[in-house]
Image 1: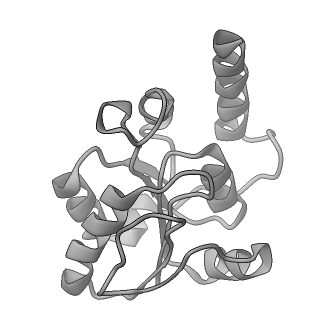
Image 2: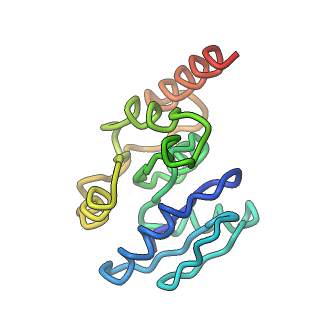
Image 3: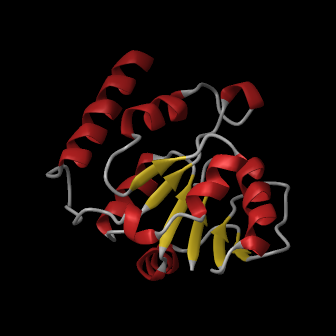
Length: 163
């Protein structure tokens, strides 16, 4: 099962709709947490907001994660040792107030177990990729891993820039 999550703060209809378009061509089912967007998927099971326990179970049983470029999703995928594909929100499309998710993706792209798709074609291609080719490195809790330290440092820089 592929887990799609768009986070809890903002809708991300573009990603949900793209995944709904791709879903019939995949050999795996999809479960999604879609938030409060307008688009309702027809080709996979979803909930608006999952309870933390349910979302943890979904992360644990997923073969891979597709997510907005939220650091919480990245860290949770690492905790469960799951490959993750990030699809950043774009301010130019009204999906966020700025392009910090693009910056996050540019910073993290190429990290073990993490891929970035910037459009539907790239997402479709990554979802067809053999899981063994994108298997995550062993997870680490906190910021002990190189990826975790990089994320923590990046978040600190963004916070300092926005204040």
